[in-house]
Image (cartoon, rainbow, N blue to C red; front, side, top):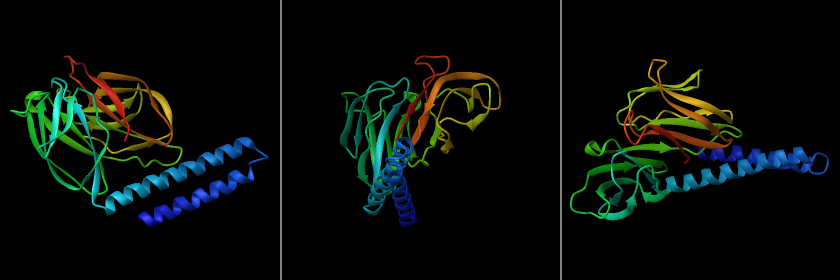
Length: 249
């Protein structure tokens, strides 16, 4: 499958390069258009090749998101070794490439190592990219892992929704006053990616199955050739308040 996709992208890259050269002097706008399409194909080929190498080497890519609204700054240890220090709410790390397998994750209040607020095993599979969120109130903190994807159809955008607000009910995500995009999403759940034309629109988070809006997300911008995860964080009716942030792979 990898080789088939790679060959298809290579063919498309060559085709767009030829079209770009054809219009180089007769139509500069078409020249630029096809050259950009050529570059997009080349970029996807490089990303696919990188991910394939990671999979063949038995490696995964992992990053961490601090999504616990009432947790303090924390230090994160992996298999007893410090990974992140002074990690604050809403902060996310860069991806780190690690061998596939199981890892012991310990989370401590920043600067302390005597009693972790969470100890949990996390397993990562070869060839995948993960975001691991420390989520829930600090009294019942847990790690929730999702697999990320940065592969996007040319000229499209894609987005998913990840519900990490501890006291919010299951929700629907909709265009403001209009179509529901994701239905009945409970806490901890990340939806599948939805492919969409690039756009800027107002979104709203509703109590599942009702018109009751608990959060409005104004001017949500989805750019072409980009993947997004919209993450609901914070508390309903408490501090820090419910909000949505958009993160990219």
